[in-house]
Image 1: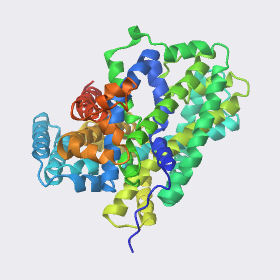
Image 2: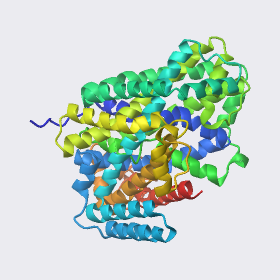
Image 3: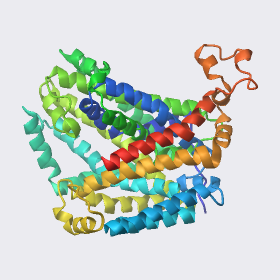
Image 4: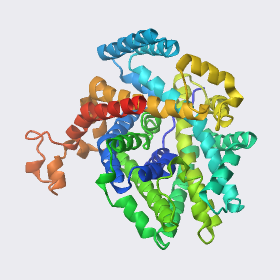
Length: 523
C-alpha cells in the first residue's frame, strides 16, 4: 500500500522548517569568518545585495517548482520538462566535446566523467538537474554530519571545562588532538546522523515540522543570549563597527565573488531542499511571502551571529580574520577570557549543533522524498537505506579529516584519475559539493524556470496565494500607492515585482552564478 503524500500542518511549520534548512553552519560558522577575512562591513553590505539579486529570486524558483508539481526534484523536472529541449541537447553536446578535448591533455578521468555527464544530459534532458539535486545532499551530508559531530563533542568539552585555554595555539592543539581521534570522530558522526535520521523517520508533520517548531525558537533564543552577552563586554563596540561600518577600501573583486557565492549557498539553494519542502504545501500558501520570511530569518541569523562573534573577539583583543579556525580555535580562547566562559562556550556550541541539525534534516529529506515518490518505498525503508548510504560515504570523511593515510588507496586513485591534490577526503568532497554541485544545480534551476518552463507559467503558479506579487506596480509599492487604481492597471504598465523577478531569473542570476562558478574553479 502506497503512503499518502504528507503536507505541513501549518504555514508557520513550513516557514520554520524551510528557515531551518537555510540556517546552518554557513550562517554561524562560515559567514563570520569570511566577513572577518574580507574587511567586515563592506563585505556584509555586498552580501546583502547578493541575497536580494540572486538568492531570493532562485529561492522563489525552487518553491514554485516544488508546489506546482508536489514532487521531489527529479519528479518536478520530469513533470515540467518538454519532450525535447534543443538547449539541453546543446549543453550535452558541449559537455561531451569538452570531455573529448580533455583527452588531449591526458586527463582520462575527467574525460570519462564529462562524457558520461554529457550523455546523461542528452538522454534525460533537464531531469539531469533534478538528479544532481538528489546526488548533492548525499555528498554534503557525508562531511556535514562529521562537522555536526564536532559540535556535539565541543558541547561536552565546554561544559566539562576541557577547553579553558590561555591562547589560540593551546586551543588549536586541543582541536587537533580532538579531530585526530578517529574512533571519537566516527562515534560523534554516527550520533549526529542518528539524530537527523530519527527526525526524518517521524515524517513531515510529526517529525520535521514538530522538531522545527522546537529547534528554531531554541536557536534564536540561544543566539540572542550569546549576542547580548558579547555586546555587553567592554570594547565590544569596536567589533560592531568592524562588522557593520562599511570600509570599501578593504573590499576586493575577489571578496565580491565570495559574497555572491556565500549568498547563494547559505540559503540551501541548488540542492533540492526548497523544492522538496515546498512540495508539501498547498496552493493556498503564499510562497512569495514565505520565501521573504525564510530569506529574512536566514539573513537575521547571519547578522546576529556576526555581532555575537565579533563583539566578543574584539572585546578580548583577538584577531578577527582567523579564517575557518575562528570557531574551534579562536572562540574557545576568547570564551576562556570571559567570566563563566565554559557556560557561554557550551551555549554557543549547542547553538551551532542546532543549526547543523536543522540543515542536515532537510538534506536527508531530499533523498528520502525521491525514493518515496519515484521508487514507491515506504518512508521508513527510504530513511534506513539513505542513512546507510551516508554512513558509507561519511566514514571516508570521518577517518580522513587530517590526511589520507587511512584511505591511501583512494587517494592514489583520485590522483591518477583526476589529479586531486587536496589534503584529505573531507576537503575533496567539500570542494566538489560547494564549488561544483551547488552552483551547477542553481544555474540549471534558473535556466529551466527562466527559459524552458517559462516565467509566465511560473508567475501563474506564484499567483495562487500571492496575487500581489505579480500585479502590484513596483514604483507604486515603494511610493505607498499600492492600492491606487491609476498605478495598478496592468494595461498601462509592466514594471511589477513579477517582471523584475523574471529579469533576475533569466539574465542576472545565470550570469552571476556562472561568474562565481568560473572564479571558484579557475582561481
